[in-house]
Length: 60
Image (cartoon, rainbow, N blue to C red; front, top):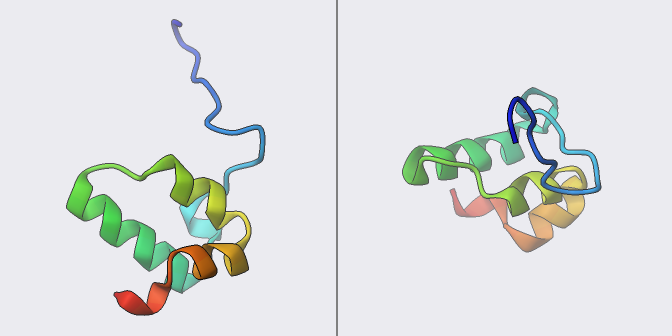
């Protein structure tokens, strides 16, 4: 694939700047530690209540 990026999901994936602060902080922390953002984080982030249930943000 030249010049194309493959979608990670059939659902829309939000931009980090669009996310609530607690979710953005959690994703940025994981990104700093691992060097990448797992796709599941971005897909779950489109539904903040589900993200928080699956990956509690209070564990920061």
